[in-house]
Length: 256
Ligand SMILES: [Fe+2]
Ligand SMILES: [Fe+2]
Image (tube, rainbow, N blue to C red; front, side, top):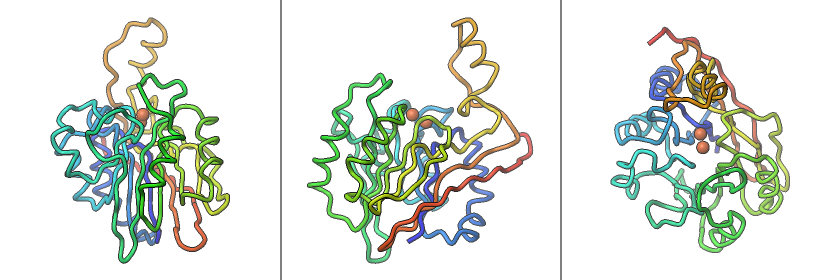
């Protein structure tokens, strides 16, 4: 089963890019299923219901989130029925701590976990939470989106769960790392990178972020408007022997 997993999708214009290009990408890479991190879709923070529906109509089978899961409070109204895995180590019962996705005869469990290093959220231990989930999950394949800042924490989580899950894919930094590998049949990358405007600071407008760093005076970050978009992620081939390939594509689009 070939799965395209896209890193954090930033801004609603990126949905338009995916509407135009996702089908051809799927054909070119023989993709059976698309998954993504959707925590930054709506104005860079959170996921509104219309944008969730737009991603669903593109055929995206499952979405993971992160520290912006509840940035748009309307998500509380639809998350129970949605194909969304929210961070499992958040101290809430709202939403699913893992998501089952059916493909042919197989069941995939999608887990979203948050790291605690340099992250200002009240979170349970990701290691203990994952141990607990492994005793509950009944699936043929398990994919974990580890949403965190520190590569050390992601790597440690990888070695702790290598051989026990099929993929551990880092998200949150929006910068793609060059360390994809398979160890004990577990696919790993420290960060998938993002899908969004290329000339930006992690998807946000450059000038506003420079001003923030120089003066400490700032407005809420805006999604950058750039005519070049990057789509970043990985292609997982999950079978008896799992494989991971890097995926990155730059697309020039007309100015919106
Ligand atoms: Fe993000
Ligand atoms: Fe994040």
